[in-house]
Amino acid sequence: MHRPGMSIPLGLPTLDASGMNAPFSPTRPQGPFEPVVPGNPPIDPELRIGHVHLRTADIDRIRAFYVDLMGFDVVFEARDVPGWGTTGDILFVSAGGYHHHLGFNTWKSAGGPPQPDGVTGLHHVGLHFSTRARLATTVKRLLDGGVRIRAALDHGTHEAVYLLDPDGNTLELAWDRPFEAWVPYGDPAAPAVDAELDLDDLLADAS
Image (tube, rainbow, N blue to C red):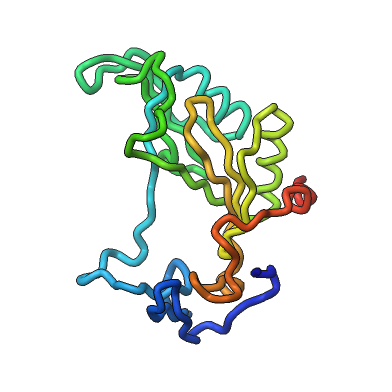
C-alpha cells in the first residue's frame, strides 16, 4: 500500500502491470511518467483537455449546483439559443478567468433522464484542484449542501472524491500529489485502484 511519504527516485525504471518498462522522467512537462507506448509522431506534449460540454435536463438546476454550490464563475449564459436543429439554453462556467471549463446545453436534452448504465459515453469528469486544502474546502461545501459522496479514493498519484451532479454525471474532484511522490502503475508500492481515502483526514484541511 502506498503511503504519502513514499516515493521512487525519478529516472528509475519500473515495470507496469503487464511487465513493460514504465520509467520516470524529470523532463516531461506534465508529469514524470514515460509512456509505455509513445505516440509516433507524438502529439503536443503540453496538450490539455480544455473543457467538457455536457447535455443537461434543466439549466437552472445545473447552474444552482455548479455556480451557487460549487462556486464556479459564469462566463456566458443565454436562453432559447438556436443549435443542432432546435433551440435551448446554454451555460458556460469557469475558474480563474478561463473562457470555460464546463459548458451545458439543453438542445437535445431538456427534461431528459440521466444516461443509463449499459451504454457508451462519458464515465466521469475530472476536476483537479491546485491544493489539497482547496479540494477539501469544496468537498466540505458540497457535503454541507447535502450532496452525497459516492467514493473517496487514493489513486497514489492523486486523491479523489467522487459524486454525482444533478444530471447524474459523475464528477471526480481531485488533487495531484507532487511529482516526486508519484508511484508508477504496477509498482509494488502503488495502491490498488480503489484504495480508500480517509475523508475525515482530507476534510481536516478545509478552510
